[in-house]
Image 1 (tube, rainbow, N blue to C red):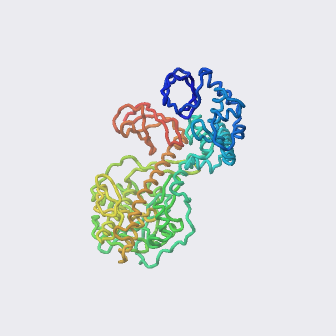
Image 2 (image 1 turned 90 degrees about the vertical axis):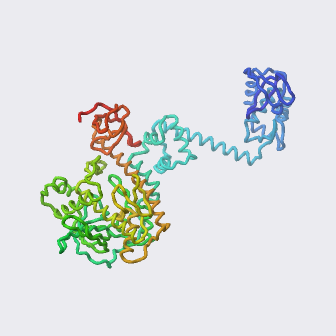
Image 3 (image 1 turned 120 degrees about the horizontal axis):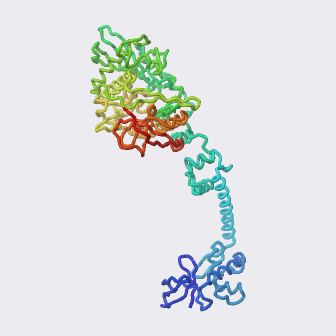
Length: 614
């Protein structure tokens, strides 16, 4: 005996070897033996044999029209064999019955399965909806196939507008036809999504690709500012008799700090550290404060920056030359031997006489000129005094000269052409600025702690720096207290801390209390944002380094071994692994081959050529 049965959602045929009433031992047309439940049997028959049976049934089923069957079957539930009798006009043969069963089973839109071998016609409205959906899917499949063909050929379909491409790159909706087509085309070509879109000309700028990913996540509403009234600096602070100058990069507009030097009647020096005071202009919760609290920091990248505060406000509070500016000042009384014998903080208006810039100052104020005291340049006496004083400050922190390590780098981007120049660390300019900032931040951090005013501190213990609302030592800097308060135009935590300092100097309650939730939120959010901003700066610097390699047509260069197979290329802040590098000591110099520069992956390959003589 042979049977037609259903198993795993498919209709099959087999020969019965043993009938155990509730179960059957069977053999398939392919010789496989199995055990099935008797309840799964749809039809029992003696002839024809199972060999070729399903092929004949499938051929007969192909001739059946599901629409005609649906029209014939009526509204009541029915068995497939009964419909076969109705259709053929006689008791159907096993092949004919099997053909009807196969056609009903394969047309779930027309026939709802109600049990073993039993069906019911779908209601007309349901069938129309299902057919419309099926037609829609068919057309979508045709559309997708067309998109795939174009994408695989390196052409961008017209519907892939810049907006569609942007969403595919940064926030793809996997249910869209465009994504489904792109996904299939990627599978066909072996390219990833970004590379395939680039091949089709949809990514005209690798730089914009990286930048836009960052902007979509961190500046979804754009980098512009709403229209807002900019507060004027208050006129209350007293006028200082200091004449100050700042030291910054050529492109700096947010001039947060300036310095002054004045000889006192007792023969000592009064050194002033003056910090821009936007904290005087707007309060926590103001619209400007909400903007700063969302941005948290200025974002720096080669050739551009995204400021924390509107340009108009920066212009009003920056320490620009030629005007008196409100400032939070720290005045140090320093002996001719460079000992600090007095400190006083004040809110005042300071005359800014000059904004010195690195590019013009460094040629005249550098290691050679401070050692020889040679040359004649503006602010020479003040700069040399500050150099001697900050050298003593550094020694007092137990840091001495320190190690140079790798240099810093300046990036200048003009007309899509990048210039990269080295700057040695701990130059006289660096030391003067950094040591005075460290001293001011340490002094003010200690002052707030002793007055029990809340603040956001930067503590370091065991080599790890962390932000905290509890004061602690900073082992790396060698100070008992440390916080950021010297860049309030550029960092939100500095602005928060400045407000606390202003309140203390004015004898007012602190804007932020101890364990203030706003303080904790600002600290947490700043940590996250500062890390993300640092990451995009690193990524864009790496991008411009690779652009420089292409621009200068560098195919081979020199490098220094950092550790294991990690090297740093000469004249660039660019580190990479060199798998072919043989084992050699740290600091060894090598020649390497540069190839396969990929601006989208921000990657390249390096091959070891030979070791260089030290």
